[in-house]
Image (cartoon, rainbow, N blue to C red; front, side):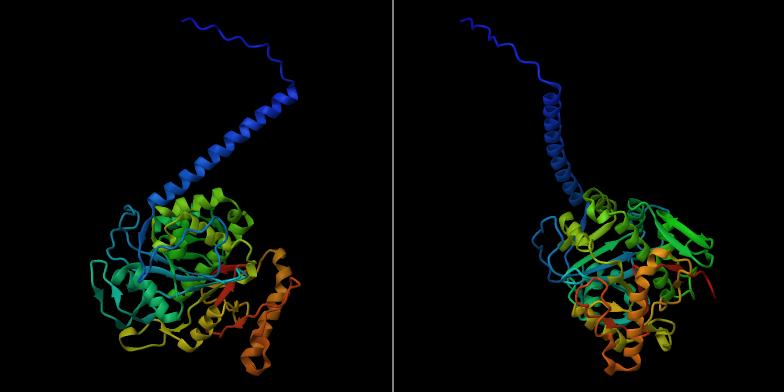
Length: 426
């Protein structure tokens, strides 16, 4: 049977405005669909590349929505010096030690964040840790904290820091050299001020006096140099690292990276191939949710501090860092209570850093508040009954947030403070 040819009436020629509107509508629909497809692919791609490990007693949590994470966060970031899978650029040194151990705490109401760096030579008790091959390792009464990765992997480092601080740490990540390189590239480099030349033959770092935008291998070398800064100790290296970290926070916030899902994904992708994450961080959504919790925290409420210690020990651990437990208790009691912390004075940056003498004039607005905080801390240190450390001055018109003035032995700075790294002076 022959079917008749369908005939249509003559279509009206659309007016230019209607044609443009129709085109825009179709284009918007295509963008929406393709954007959703890209987001799905991006999430799958990052997830498929991540290596995970279960912390002691950990079970996989509920994946949050793409929004700031609910409540507070304790996340341990461990930098590994392992050369495994990192190419031949770093030599063939065997082993797997903690090059960096940092604990980040975000307050439950997302009003402040504190990052604590633990010296790699800090001598601490190590609890019994799970053996990745089965069973468990015996506890040890005193070992440098940087052996924990080789002793029981990331779960052992977490258990050790939990025992040392009294805090529960549900999130943890181990990053390798190439991961640091890729993440510094992803943010486009970090400006770092140097007041004295840094010359370190061990890491191959040489930087003249001035400001340098560091990324890639240069950023990694700067973060790793110990002999090139301060007094050559790991305590000096930590304060120099805080120069980089505070500038990194300013760079990320000024570039609105934390408001840009594309950039956040780029950071996650940059790190994913060179990190081991706890199962609680296995979803990229969780990483993004934690990053979003930092988005609205004021720079002066992001504080970097070093775990307090002394190198006056003798015997088997001469030259190693001995914990100052009483002073550390002040710090971790404040963190447990979700209180922001403040160093004894703004210049208490540690032997590897100093306040930038040429700090941008824009920071002057925050200087009165910083000076008031320092005065409160000094008053509290000389007269505990004064109550001066009970609160920081409030510049926002809201009720003053309670803050804890730290002992003089705890060095550090806020992300609002412009500081410079000090080159070799020994």
